[in-house]
Image 1 (cartoon, rainbow, N blue to C red):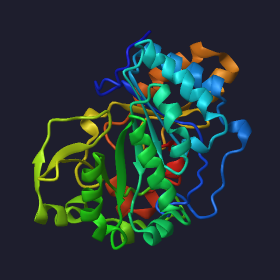
Image 2 (image 1 turned 90 degrees about the vertical axis):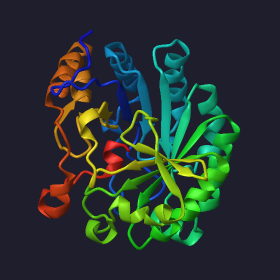
Image 3 (image 1 turned 90 degrees about the horizontal axis):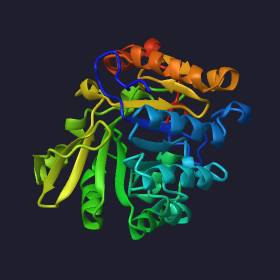
Image 4 (image 1 turned 60 degrees about the vertical axis):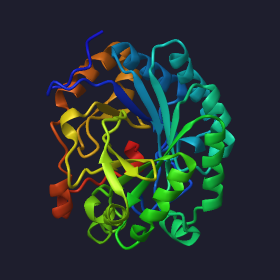
Length: 331
């Protein structure tokens, strides 16, 4: 099998697989309230996802994350969870993780733990029930908190993902940091990105990370950490809380130099960058010409992977923004 080296010499060992574009929340920075989803015929079935995962693993992928949409709303998702878990158990994968909104995590936490998932990343933008309901357009905070607790009880490491939203959850950063520290959860803060038509205005919601974390810096000491995960976060210790804080800053501090990721969408496309429309269609190749065609497309995808995203220009120039919503690509 050909090695996973892109056109800029970066080693690609991490695959994010979106298993569905559907979600039971409608977070205003992610998708419109009345979102259209893919017809079922366009979505990869579990056998196709498993075949592609096997192929990627053979090429050198060592870490896989399941995303959506909300991955746990897809019917019979435990079939794929169990199948992927066998790769960890056999030593073919180093890490399996899941990104979720947490609403169905109480039910699935034991299944994930049994299938060798090591961590769950839970989107949680507010600890205030009313603010949470507004951001998610109807989400139940108590249900999510129960899911988070269940994940921890079953031995899954928990990372909370909080999107920085100006004038909406900006005042909650101290409360979120203390909540995570008290429970032993990591916290990642994410700058909002110019993705998708019909979502909340980016100029109104966007806040630079340094402004968002200013209350943390005023009250606590932030010490840089050498720790790295498989994603783009840069990590800090928040003393004396003992909180491991990840900062994901696509707008203010580019992190593309050491990008190690590809994204497989629920309709079988590989996007080489979250901020690019360039893609190759694995579903079409696999269904029409088999797995050898997939191997050729994979090498093409690696050659086409851009050196960096272009979110800064897309934020400044609305006509340059991608129409694709975050739920279509996977987080």
